[in-house]
Length: 449
Length: 64
Image (cartoon, chains in turn red, brown):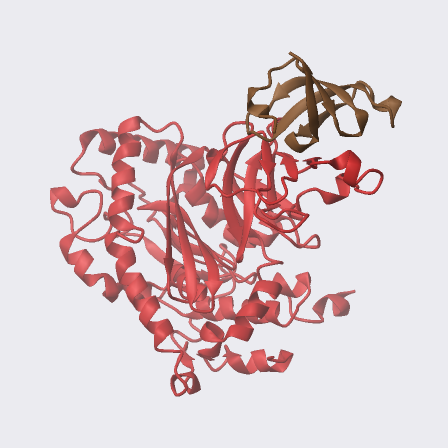
């Protein structure tokens, strides 16, 4: 079992080398489940997946199955999907509506607020012994409905979700808010789920802002799969960020984003050329957003990862991703595709088709990514391969720390974000306290006090 | 074996431990009924309580 100091050797962010062991080793993986996935805030789902009382959606936190459900009073809960009697899943469906969760094994039965309500032969077998209240479904320690996205942590000592996001909040907001600048107001119009043989960190790192891997999508770019592809536009998306100042930001909590700041003369760039209705709708959204947000409208999202395993695409396509670990070398990818709840039906249908063209196991772009993650994982499992660490020396020191957006801000493609992600991963693996996990150096709190 | 799917609201049942109860809701899952206790010899204070009752607890259908 790696000791505390071992992690500093495995992850050398100063030198820019990271051992392949952290992507393939079974023992390190088991420790990740305990030290990262039971403490960090994790994306569970979206409120639009459970709009009505009794609605449920089975999700995952780490390797474990959880139930996202709305009780009959309308309150949202997240429970471990495991009976308190012998551990059987009490819910074996992906989603639906119910008044009760009944364990198929011995029929212990729970209400949608998690309470143990029914126990067969309760009065004859458990009379005066079984405390039903104490045998409710195991609930997460903290839950946050943030602009419709549902996040949870098993750690009762974790900071609130907004504190956890830190300065990455404004970037995640861009993915969750309405296209016209109103806060929240999104809905999920579909979820892609697939399992791929790669370590979960390959996917999380890819979305931190690894713009350097663009050449792997060259073939797609030459064909053109963006919203205006039929009008002859090449690339994966349209040109709305072509005049922007791109920024790559590493945040102390381990999050990382690639966003863009539009020029002062922030004018609409046609982005849906082959559909006049969509073009009109998005032009209207652009002007409304500019009117609402003023200078703030110049900031646009591209991609990002909220530590540890939630990523987003902020514009084209727009959605949230969860990278659920299955094993050191296997991950289940989920993509939740977002649209404005009150968008015209035609816009939703158009975007749904674009999302499918772009993402998921049959999407043109994700196939490129997965080929890389799969072979990188497979090629890192060998005895000889493990002796050679990955190189993370790109753009060393090329960032500023006094930018108004916070964090380490770079204006060139950089692996500073990945170095920041793995620095924080190391803090989790070393059992750091929340002060350290949010980015303060070990011992600084005591020094300050 | 009693098929609880067929039991209607208002039916009186005899349950384990001498309990007599009236069905207030059939959960329609073939296992559970919501019942109100009418007689409860071991705990008279429980009369009036509404509880989930499992098919295995139903001894006899008294009336419909």
